[in-house]
Length: 400
Ligand code: C5P
Image (cartoon, rainbow, N blue to C red; front, top):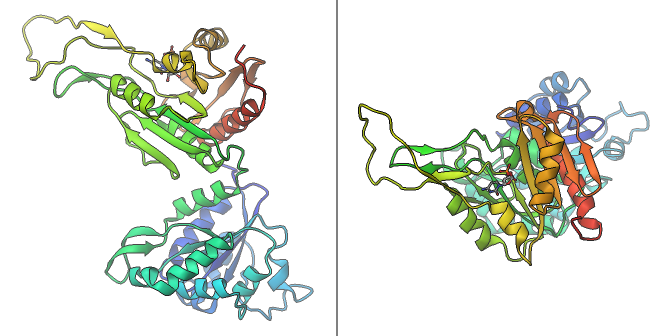
């Protein structure tokens, strides 16, 4: 992963128990190619010392306003110059109060005031502190000042109470930060999509399904949301967490998936079928478990609706995108599908390159031809699809 390659992040750590998660966040960012400059407040250093951050970043850690290591003595200004973002994680209630009022009495708060890059904070505090009217006012002020507020999460707290105020986990913060750095190429676009497999029940315990982890569709939903789109994700049965920023509707069968899609369709700019929809379903659903007999049994199947083709054929069809997972002759089948189903774009891949795994190699087929994307992690492939789709949406409408 090189998602932060060439990017410098300034990470402020204030005095909260969640400071231990900041160490893990640094590790994830450094692994992804980031240069991380850590700025510790005096209280932050009480929880995790500078040696830990220095070892993890391979860079010196900054603590004092009067630090003489910066040649011009301007650490409070120079540290954010050229940085992609300044993230404060954990951000205590006290630190957020200082930010909201523009105080600058230590290195980190001064950096925040003198910054030249986006500022994000990850609140971490006891639930009553989070709910306190003073904190509510400060959070509202920070939002109005375009400071990004990441979280907090709901859950068990270090003090033993349960509620809102827990800092997001390191991986979640990583994901949020990465999303905040994405260009908002799809701002204002409403995108409806399907993902995962469908499950066509035979009896109360058995059914027909297919191999689809849902990973590509979920990564795509995440990338669309990070690019500023409003995403509705109709998902078949998968074991994946809901992508941040997406509205998820769970379904099981193809018929349910179709109903959910048609209900959500009005007002959408784009429809993307990523789901591996079962082509057939059992003609009959047995109310009770089918018992084993001595001989074989024959299943009678009937075709499922083709959700994508149905949506694309409507007079009010949004821009439609399909997926084509083939085992051979990718270009022929994918482009054939695009023309037959009247789609604006088809994302084609060879099943041997993508199924179930974390990476994928895809080719995008549109009216202008084939555009291969390099083999990459599904999240990176998703970003490639986002930027291509954004270009197609800008171009004058028309399929062929
Ligand atoms: O024709 P084929 O099933 O290969 O087409 C795949 C594309 O069509 C995918 O985008 C898939 O989500 C969509 N599809 C659908 N409903 C079906 C079958 C496929 O929406 N019944």
